[in-house]
Image 1 (cartoon, rainbow, N blue to C red):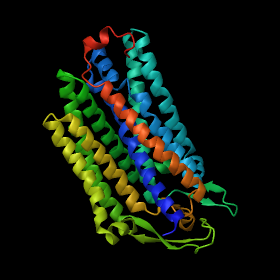
Image 2: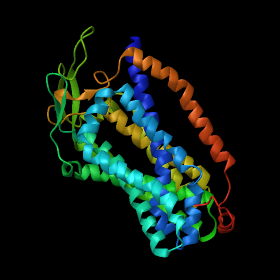
Image 3: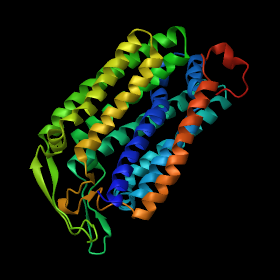
Image 4: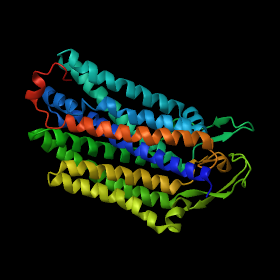
Length: 377
């Protein structure tokens, strides 16, 4: 295999790593925001919940930046096509994420119940909406996205916002939200005590069970969908563009990679194992173990989607032959090589300082510990 193809596959794997990092770290914070009104029954308990993720939530946003930056630099056609096509969805996502830091920073500025309740609900919306959008976006890939290219590779999006809210995409969105709730609840269990921990236990179990059921239904649903197959593509030495390939539609084609390589069934198995393990760990009070098993569940879910879609990155429902794949949507060999060099240095650094920050600020958060802390949320 030539070096360029190896770099493309490496970046496909790295994109998966960044998406999993985003889902685990940012999804955990958003899960806490989603369950804030239910896990905390009064203002003090809600402050405890916010201060459990308080030292980390803004640092976790680096995974969002890394994911967006990686798509922009490694797969520019994907970035240009998806961001212009999903314009309304992206604006919805950005507005929700703009409201979120405002909720953290301004909620505690005025000691008024109506003021703080309003910000609590803003944190709920800004936690739940992005996770639903995240899952729905992945779900829409299995139906194909309505776009095509002009002769000069200018993308034309022909869909609508409401069309993105199809039943399968909604299922994927709710699955994403359920995993986020599970991770947020396990995080509360790690940092809270007493009644809050008991309420978080119930929410963690509920999230794990819902996610388990929806992941199973989603797998059966994908098996019944019409999938895409790359029938022909330009040969060696010819520019790889979406204007020079042939893609066919076949029933159950999204399962072809699993059929051809049975070892890949370990990926969805990891998803089910992670959800079931997180549920059992929560029930036995081992919330730290449950958190890591929740991360394994995210890895299995996102990995399963990636394996099923490979080599497609953005299938086109308007003209399947114009679908974007790993082979025709990647940057140049030089760009991928330079980016890989930077990634080898900086991603381990991000993982190291994230782990260090969690280690330094470990321990329980109690009403007493935030009462006299002028920096507490």
